Image (tube, rainbow, N blue to C red; front, top):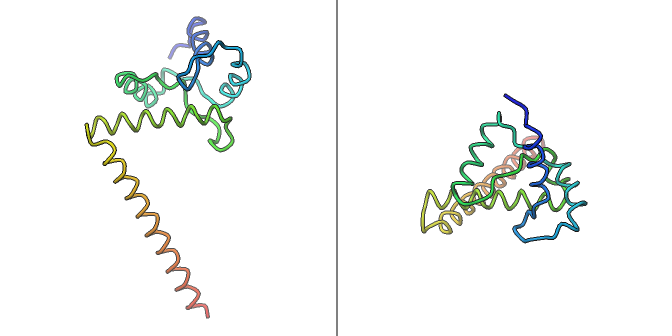
Length: 139
């Protein structure tokens, strides 16, 4: 694949100066946040088909494309970076739910969360049972 042209590179860097949360800014406080974001993102390469497909989906759904993939741990990323990726995840989830269950997004999402919670509870109970059972055998 070809490398990004200098104009494309400038566009990628300029995108970092855009407000992440959708609010406008005059750019005066962007320099410190920009450094945090640059340290935690990987530019969207043309060869990364999965991210390209995601960005196409987001754009068709009326959202801005993701600027790149998180390359560091979410827990150690800067707060601004975490907010950005959390917002992108919300947009993607909302768009998927809208496509799959138009008009019933909230009900489907509640069911998914409930099912995940039930699975976690069941797995915790199984682990407790197995732990208690193994102690009984070792006694």
